[in-house]
Amino acid sequence: MDVNVIREALHKQPFEPFVFRLADGRQLAVPHPDFVAVSNRRVLVISPQDESVAWLEPLLIVSLDYAGASPGTSSSGNGG
Image (tube, rainbow, N blue to C red; front, side, top):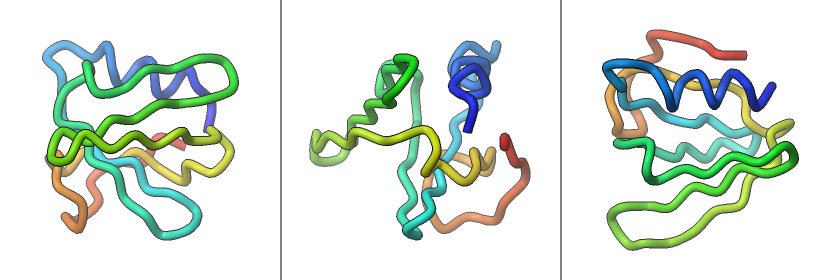
């Protein structure tokens, strides 16, 4: 996924929570833009529930789904 798509999602006004869907089947909720940092080669996601950290390769991000901030909800958008 292009990191500019991720940046656009994080700067959307008003912000809409979304879920990163990854190639390995994992889903990472983004309830607020403060839980994500984006560089040109990596995406850092912090889980608000347990403060765990995930470093993601943008190429392994399959989609951004705007269906709230909880994984497992139905897809309403695809960023990539």
